[in-house]
Length: 450
Image 1 (cartoon, rainbow, N blue to C red):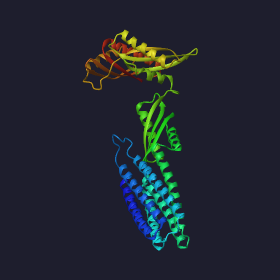
Image 2 (image 1 turned 120 degrees about the horizontal axis):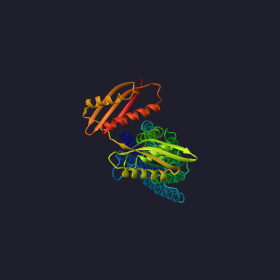
Image 3 (image 1 turned 180 degrees about the vertical axis):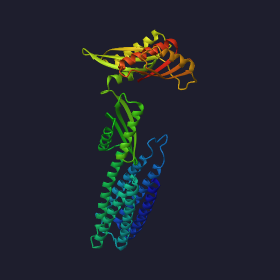
């Protein structure tokens, strides 16, 4: 795409430079100040087009250590320099036009040569407008758009110059100078606008409507609670945006990353040529207390796991209960210190909770790979299960040994009419009996209806 742009700009600069040479030579021969003025305008447009060409080529360079946002600002800088140059030249021709209007009529007046040069330039301008317009439709680009506008400026200024020359041919001797004066004023106005626009680009101005559009797109993305600061800037064709979003505080990192990707894609689908950076922050406003407690406690040093988190309200006060797993080898004093830290953290971050009751449990890390099955232990467990009359059927028993840890999975059937509470009590009792006989065992009982 960048290669196509540079080729179009190369054709454009050759075309406008040829118009400069024809207008300058024929203007000097026919003594037409308007034509000479328009030739200088064509020369300056050639320079601006060259700057745009260089900018398009520099835009092909990837960001580096000194230009982390790329090299797009070179285009704005070139436009600023070109605008200042056009303004100074325009001031000179305004001065020269006024001076010649106050002077006697010249001996040599513009004629056929001047008109021929003007018609040639008009043809060049129309040619540039056509190729630039077609290229913009196909590949786009700020550099092509800028040169497209310059081509229109050239066409307008050349038409004004020809009108002045025609007026001279009908005996209005000062028509050429009046046309040059009009062109000088037109160029001065256009150059001031160009200087103003490029100066604003260099100060990273951005449309508030564009920022609002990005905010609206972000807010409508599923999972986004709120939108924080949005920082945007333009560098060449690319719009850079840093967007801060708020997500539910209990969202997992994977979920947060997924939402961020969705925001980025939604913005890119609506606004082309954008480079998006998403920052996400936790928002706990509407998150349940249980989730807040879980997030707080799991990050406490020494905590190996948290489960069965619950909160309840009694007489206007909120209480919390939670099960916390700690290293099974530490003593009660060390474990109690961890629970005190947890209580203090809950009180500090969730002051509406009156008290937190912490149930400490030993944590046994289950290895991902076990060495071998323990058939002797499986038979031993089967005999222990037979003493429980509530068990209607003993199913699969799997015992896997890893160093000093024994992982035991048991399937057994109970009366289908038993309440789940009674089943839970029975499985807990069975686990206790097995643990008393088999040390360092991790037991999972899967109850089934008989």
